Length: 288
Image 1 (tube, rainbow, N blue to C red):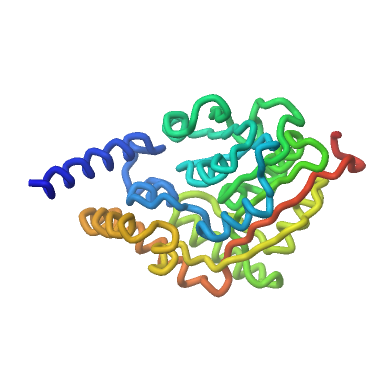
Image 2 (image 1 turned 90 degrees about the vertical axis):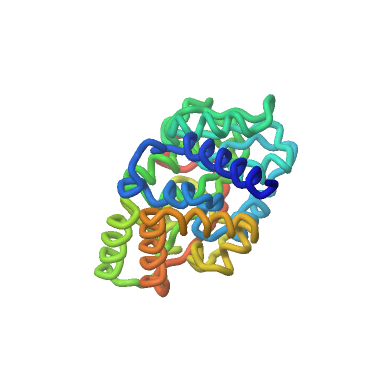
């Protein structure tokens, strides 16, 4: 009987979470890859896993004196990690209404607020933050959109403020254009969203072009769906739930195995990179 109650409770919890995910009414065949993983029960959706996220947060040196903006908080895993450091204010800028509503219900009231907006047009006041960060979002944007989002991050930062990113990267820096295009096409086809990563040197250059000075950089392998990383990121109980969810749903299983296959196929040329940069006082040609 106890097992039946636990199973029913787990099913209700899973159904409630699914109903709050973006694209909840969308067919799994059409759903974007990161929300497919969330549908399976995966909480950590960042390419370098919790390990690289923790390193980024440490490099950002967030304290109670900081006012923090997070672009696209998604499932809220990093938000909760940051809020444990008790910043004076936290804003999460989330464009997906379902994700924004879910986050609003999970985060503490008062110092934390979710803003329903796109990252490049947050609607927040300029120089309102000492820390801005975003994870696993720039890699899925065009070059023009990447620049608009980074420009918005700079606008929100006070001079000397810190901006953190955690993204997919190509390896090595000298990877051929033909291989890059092949990976972009195959990944975009499989995860149903455009993917345009950069090499580590190119990520650094992109930040510097927007008046940001890189002060820290870390990298990790793209082991997001490998057993060892899954256990590190999700824990054994969550991993067992994910396995059960995937085993029961053939379409979900097919999508996740296909995504993992792409990661493995191009593992030599794909990784995760995180950087922290500071906003310089003023740069010629950029708004102050």
